[in-house]
Length: 247
View (cartoon, rainbow, N blue to C red):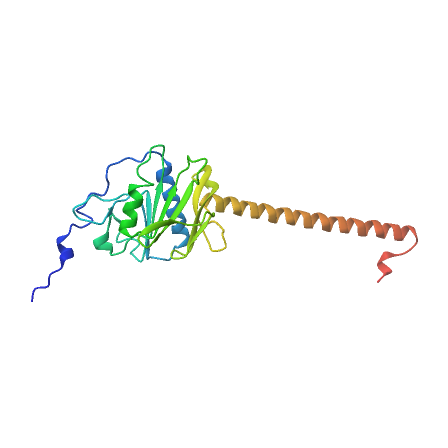
């Protein structure tokens, strides 16, 4: 009996374009997703069931071009296949819709608040995150959750906890690749941000300095106590009392 596999008739990730050849508008559209990916790699070093794509095409229909978020997170998939890594994210191969999509808005809108939002909802992506660093009066960071087929804005808090991911996401000033500015971070359940390598190094230096300061203060106190004891002994001797004879 012949077994028919419809997936075998669909193009594979090796046969599909791995880019839409559209350049990013600015560095932040590359650096911000890259930071989130790097933080996950440090937070989940032993986990092999997640993938974070940066400017990578998501194929959901063999007859349509890929959609390309600035970043996206998928859980329950292989972290990597082999040393050549993924060329693109093909839903009929992965069998998992990403759980989060991220768009970083530049000076020129690219449908982040309209067409892309509708596409991600139709695709079934649970969380949609939009970061617009150029906004002044409206929130720079907006996080939506898919509810009953449409996106609902989550509470205006920073960070926002995402229980299905087990992390929160928010914005905060920090340093990444030597650049001090406002970045997007992952947060633990206590609301503490996951630190960049530079921030970890700086924190370690601060702790070392604090430990050295405490050691110096303790040494100074010990020297002061020893000096007071010597002065007291001199005073007793001047009164004809041998301090060594005292118990």
